[in-house]
Length: 219
Image 1 (cartoon, helix red, strand yellow):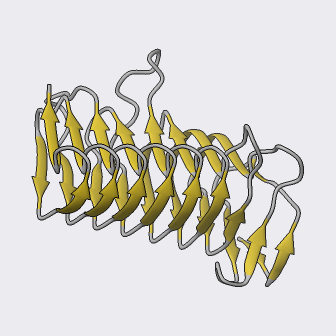
Image 2: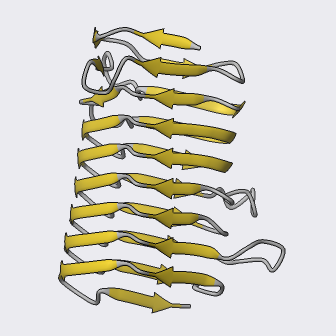
């Protein structure tokens, strides 16, 4: 575990080994501001990594707050992301991730973006996006592509496009996708946009003040 004491750090974070935790004193006390146009936190082909309790602020044009690819059994918890020029959190080709209790404010694109590589089908699965606050995004608040994941208890405000988007195809080998307990307000398109919706459980969500349908379901 790497403990990060209170302060402002002009640094980037790269996970180059498995089973590493970077833990800030608290997101109110630890601020990481990247030098130049670097993405602040990167990881590739890693397992059991953790990013906890710090603020990532002002990634510049062309960079992300977090960009992890081919990562399994890992967490982003208790962090803040402020003024990200592109996406705050980007995860590609991964499984068993927990994205929990983060605060994302003001992004140029998506707040939390999970995507899949077309050459690596059936790799985005069994992830949990829970209890995050996402607001003032330049595109969707949360976008989650392909296969069963849980998107629960999040609050999305002021997304330029839809609040929460799920898409992709499902295999009977996996459990259902769950979209539950979320609150979505003041979005420029749909509140919840559930595409390719076989085996999706959509329950106990609150949607208000969106430009189009509160819930849009399509195949």
